[in-house]
Image 1 (cartoon, helix red, strand yellow):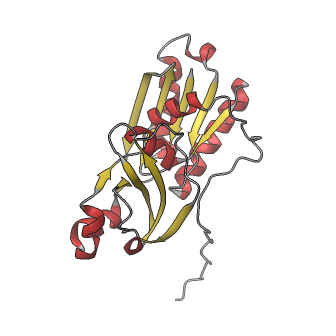
Image 2 (tube, rainbow, N blue to C red):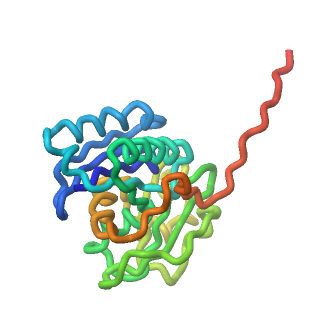
Length: 226
């Protein structure tokens, strides 16, 4: 049994899976809701059946790329639970989880996209429809007007905020928008994919960090002038 969360986007999602079946799933969407919703959702998952806590064999969390604060909240919470329950924590890339959910719907070369800020996005390529493992060898980070490629059959990911507006309103986005599939963060896919990866070595919790795929710098405080 796997307890999983995904806080990589504006969606806060928690799920419980057992042998390929989703036993519990709950989510909410909104800006900066992870600190408010994640713990109650986990508590509901663990108390929905008295045997859930005893039967959990691992935790799983989406580690990025994605929301800077969301990823920190999700990983810190799941680390604490893993230590408290004495269970391993399985990190799942956010784009792997999205691709896993689309593996039976899409065929060919697909590009996963996650909005970052301003006009920047994270993206990674997958070959869906094949029997191989869902893995990407390289991640990219750049402006959204560099997404389009004639080699890509489908685009998928979280189209929100400014990225959603660009897709719908900018004529330059047409090659991407025509092939774009909206996919929200989903802890259910994180849990099911983690079931398949339980045999993989799990990094030491002290070494496990969010995968931001970009270098973030703290804003310098500027004193106000009066």
